Image (cartoon, rainbow, N blue to C red):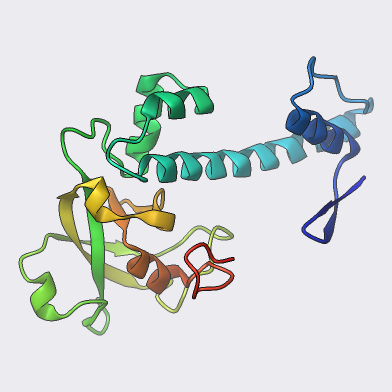
Amino acid sequence: MRISIEGERVEVHDDLARALLAALRDEQPVKPPQASTFDDLTALVDCISRVAQRLNVVKELAMSRADATGSYSNRRALGLAAGMAPSQLGRVLEGHGLPRDRRAGGVDLAVAFRTTDDGVLHLAAEEDVAGLPSFTLPFNPAHGVVEPTEFAGRELLFYYRPQVPIAVADLGRTAGYTLRPERGPIACLTEQVFDALFGDPRIDPTRPNGR
């Protein structure tokens, strides 16, 4: 079955297409797949697993961005929308660099980096990073998530400001993207650091929402 999304027609497993339509319509009860052979059912399971994995990534990014919209965002409403208990919601947000208890602190915010092979500092002057804590991390972005720039595959020294309040950090569209050095802090990224590493992902970089 083919479905059309923003003018692009995509071939989709028939049962998956019907399930997606029913889910978007919130139809109940859930109908079983019509496929009957082992190969067809296995292909359906594989397709659903890949879609579910990507949707879960988008879901967590949306959750982290919603939480980062302000210091007093409604986590109860967010938990209800995500179908998560407060403890589970806290763990997910913490995994994206956001504080479990927003009254206890903020986020570690990466503001600049240095390429260790040539010692060049990017996005800041030397006096701006003097005294800031840092960590070294090989930049090897996951394939297919974003489009890495010339820094991919290089070792970078990141400078960060510790425990910046969410309202001040102004994470915007980068909320949910983090750097995780081994046995080190989970650092959120400013939009400038994100764009330098991955390129600006917006369709129209001159507009805030990219549209």
